[in-house]
Image (cartoon, rainbow, N blue to C red; front, side, top):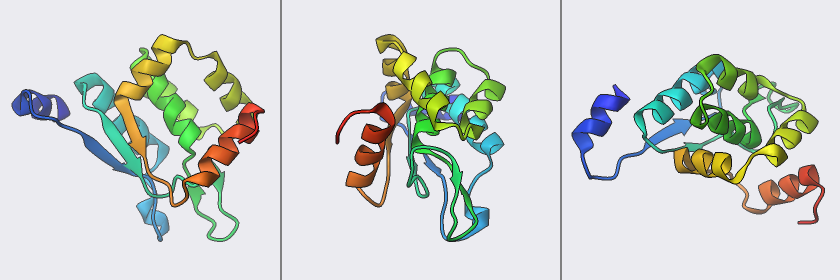
Length: 145
C-alpha cells in the first residue's frame, strides 16, 4: 500500500507517522508491528516520523505504568538495519533489545553511509522533553551533555 501511495504522490512530499505509545497499554504497538512499519516505509522509500512513548533511549518497562516502551535508540538502529538491507526479523530483534551496551556499540559502529540511510528514513521523533534524550544519549556514549 505504501508503494502505491508513494507512486501516486509523485513529486509531492509524502511521509508516514508511527505512534509508539500513549496513556493505555493498547496504544503501544508490538515490536512486530513496528518492524513491519519500518520495513514497509524503507522498501517504499517513504520517510517517517515517530511520536508518543519514546521517553528513553532503550526499550524498557515503566515502573509507574507497567507498560513496555520502545526506545528511541532501538528505533534508530532498527531503521538503520532496514535501510541497510536487514529484513523484518532482524529489525524486530533490534527493537526487542534491552541491552544498552549492545545498542551503544551498534550505534558507534555505524558508518557514515549507514547513518545517512537511516536518517533519510527516520526524519524525526517526538519526546516530551528536549533535554532528557540528549542527556541520556551523552551518558550512553560516554560524553558530557
